[in-house]
Image 1 (cartoon, rainbow over the protein chains, first blue to last red):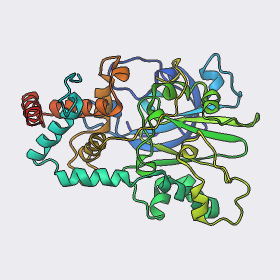
Image 2 (cartoon, rainbow over the protein chains, first blue to last red; image 1 turned 180 degrees about the vertical axis):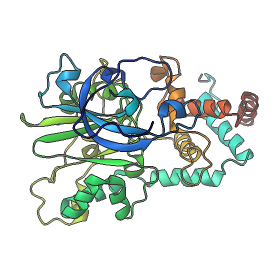
Image 3 (cartoon, each protein chain N blue to C red; image 1 turned 90 degrees about the vertical axis):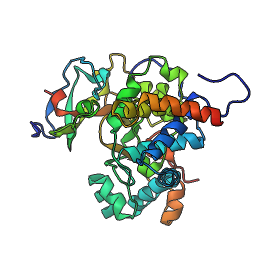
Image 4 (cartoon, one colour; image 1 turned 60 degrees about the vertical axis):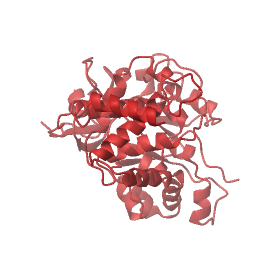
Length: 93
Length: 197
Length: 96
C-alpha cells in the first residue's frame, strides 16, 4: 500500500463505484479512461481524514488527462480538448 | 434563520461565528490577536503576488523552468511564503489554453492569489467549466482561436493550480513591475488573457 | 457537481464582511496553519458541507456554510459541546 503503481503515459480507468462518505473522485469521471500525466506525490487519504482518522498510509495521487470528447457524449469543443483531474491511486485500475 | 425585528445585530450564522470564537478563546485554543492577525494576513494576499510570479517567469527562462517543475519552490525563491500550498503551474501556449476549476468545492491557490472570487465558487462555474469551457470563456468575453485546444484542470485533491498566461506582444522591454500590472487574477485562473494596452 | 446543467456564470464579486473574514481565519488557524493549533482538517470541513441539506447552496452563503461546518466539527471532536454553544449564543444575543 502506498507504492506508486503507475507512471506518466500509462492508460488508466477510473473505477465505477458509488460509496457513501467523503469522496474526492468526481461522479462525472468515474468509469472513464485517461492517461497518467504525472505522479503528484503521496498524500493522506481524504476519505479517511474526513472521518477524523489519520489518512495513513499516504496514497499516491496522480493527475490524469482525459479527452473531453470521451467524457461528455455531447461535447462540442475541439477533439483535442482535455480535462485533467487529480485522482488517488485506489480509484484507478 | 434571520430575525425579522429591526433590532438584531446578528443573524444566526454571525451569532454562531462570534460564539464559536469566544468559546475557542475561553478554552485557550485561539486568541483574538491570532484571529485578527490571520484576517490581516489574508487581506494582504492578493493576485498581485501571483502577478509577480508570472512577470518573473516571463523575463527569466530559468525561473520559468523551475516554476513549471515545482511551483511552490519557485514562489518561495521569490520570497513569497506559501504555507501548505502545493502549486502546479500550467502554461498557456500558442496551441493550448488552460483553465482552472474546483468542481467539488472551491479549491484555489489562496496563499498566492487571496480569497477566490464569488463566481469561482458558484454552482454555475463549477458545473459548466469542465463540460463546456468554451461557452463559459465566451461569457467572460474570451474567444479563443479556432485551433487552440483547451485544458481544464479540476482541483480535486491536494494540488492547487496557477495558469501562466502567454506574454502578449507589445510588451517588449517592459520591466517586471509593468509586466505584473497586466496580469489579472482572471488571467491566472484562465478565464482571461493579459492585454498589453 | 461537475457536468450538471447550470446557468450563466455571473462574474459576481463579493466584498467580504469582517465576520466572514474571521470565519476564514478560524479555518486557517484550526487547520494548524499560521501558528494555530491543528484541531481539524479541510477534509472534515468539506464533509460537513456536503452533509448540509440539498438546498443549502441556495439558502446559505459561502461562509454561512463554512461557519456551520467548522462548528459541527468542533462539536464532533468534543472541542465544544452543543450545550456550551447554545448557552453562549443566547448570552451573546442578550448582550447585543
